[in-house]
Structure formats: C-alpha cells, structure tokens
Amino acid sequence: MDLRQEPFARDAPDWTHPESYEATQAFARTARDAGIGLILYQSVRDPEHGERGALLTPRGFAPPRLPMVKQTWFLTVSGTAAAWQREGERYELAWG
Image 1: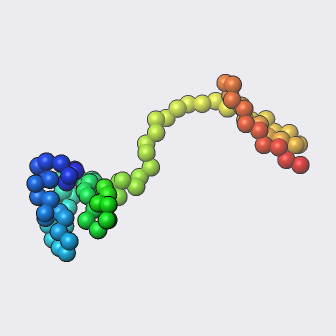
Image 2: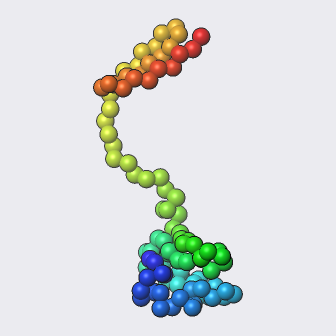
Image 3: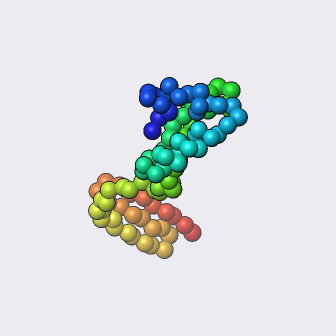
C-alpha cells in the first residue's frame, strides 16, 4: 500500500504530521487487520523526504522461495585437491 498515491495522498497532512503519529498508527492497525504487509510512504524527518517502508508482518524477512532445481554434481577427492564438476562447470580446491 502506497501512501504517496491516491486515494491516500489526499490525507498527506495526516501522514506527514511533524509531531503526531496517531493517524499513521491507526492506519497501520487497519492495514495489518486487512492483511496488508507493507506501507510505502515519504519520510517526514529525512531532510530530503526519501521513500520509506513500514513492514507490518515478519514474512518480509523470510528468505525468498526459490524454485527447486535438480542438479547432478561429481566430486573427486585426491591427496592434494577436491573438485566438483557438472555440465561444463568445474570448481577446485587445492591444498597441501
């Protein structure tokens, strides 16, 4: 949800009040109850009024769900090195 866009932008004086968080906190409670996970807004305290986001759920910190990809790698270990290889890729770690 983006407070910088209509219909929310018309209430910018409430969202950008320099001393009161009452309107923004009430809005966040309503948004959280509606299942909204993120509110985008313009910073009041940043001299350049940069963009900010209020994360309303811990799911925003979850790692991305990457698609499962099956790969076959071959590992070769000798007395001086280990090598992993598959379809044109090779990584080697030497020691000793």
